[in-house]
Amino acid sequence: MSGSSIGVLFKVTTWGESHGPAIGAIVEGCPSGIDLIAEDIQKALDRRRPGRIASSSPRKEEDAVKILSGTFQGKTTGTPISLIIENRDVNSSAYEDIKDIFRPGQGDYTYFKKYGIRDYRGGGRASGRETAARVAAGAIAGKIISKEGMEVIAYTKALGGIAIKLKGDAAKKISHKNIAGSTLMCPDPDAAKEMEAKLEKARRSGDSLGGIVEIIVRGCPPGLGEPVFDKMDADLAGALMGIGTVKGVEIGAGFKVAEMTGSQANDPITPEGFLSNHAGGILAGITTGQDIVIRVACKPISSIAKVQQTIDVQGKPVELSIKGRHDVSVIPRIITVCEAMVSIILADHLLRQKATAHE
Ligand SMILES: Cc1cc2nc3c(=O)[nH]c(=O)nc-3n(C[C@H](O)[C@H](O)[C@H](O)COP(=O)(O)O)c2cc1C
Image (cartoon, rainbow, N blue to C red; front, side, top):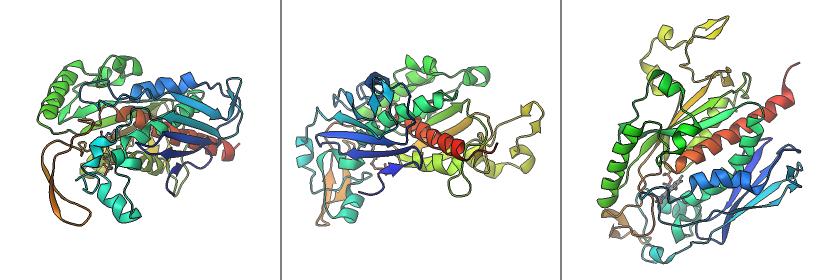
């Protein structure tokens, strides 16, 4: 299946389906000599796993990653790194009843129209399970960019219409540490409580919720991004839009710029630096050296217990209530996936910049 790779110099290919024997990633272009053992990748995978909260999928996967190639004595060798994660807790029986029925909001209808064949077991390649392979590859990208002082942090900004209320300094201090203790990876404990109650209500009523994830990149040097078709903002948006449930990507002031005047939207430049960051750390597709700020809008999980109208493969109308093991919201599980995709794009652009940088 084409469309399974991303990146130019740092290139990631994912493979595998939700209910196949395993999923994995191949990472090409990783520089040699980087410390890398399976535990480094495992830490990132453990943050993505289902089971942090009652509203996440009850599927119990260990997500134990194995490095099959590309390292020797704990260091990368510069050859392709192959990663494998076995699917252990596979139970396709819940999908037997819907094997000829298209779930509204899922990829069932479009995959069938495109490929003419239906892997109905757990959503196949369209499943959130595929994103474990992205997170594994993203952990390697994270190693490359952190050597240059970059840090990528994503967190829950809103869930089910409840937004965090942090402002000023509290917002600036958001870190991996202060979201680590939150089951929803949300830095505002009061908002998180409200979100959890709303999630539980949605779960009980057989429904689901969407939300907003904000991603901040700190320590990014100026000069990354390749105009005109591989601008940093274009590549970040593409990488994030490629995650299931993501329906919108905003950078900096995002859609608000449409309501601003030029004098409000411009970030004044002084000898000490920029005075604001409406551009979200990117101008003309090239990083400015400020924080990169991105938000993604995630739709509610489509597989819900509430009765919905749909059709079967013969086009006959059917009423559907979905059983099976599903998340109630993609938040917080999508957070590490967002970090991974952003890290992959940054690692690729860092290597591209190093290859072509001016003296
Ligand atoms: C981490 C993660 C977990 C997901 N879990 C589920 C799930 O449990 N049930 C489901 O129907 N969709 C789930 N999805 C969403 C589907 O992958 C996605 O809705 C589907 O591929 C259709 O793509 P679209 O929503 O971008 O249109 C998940 C997505 C991610 C990223």
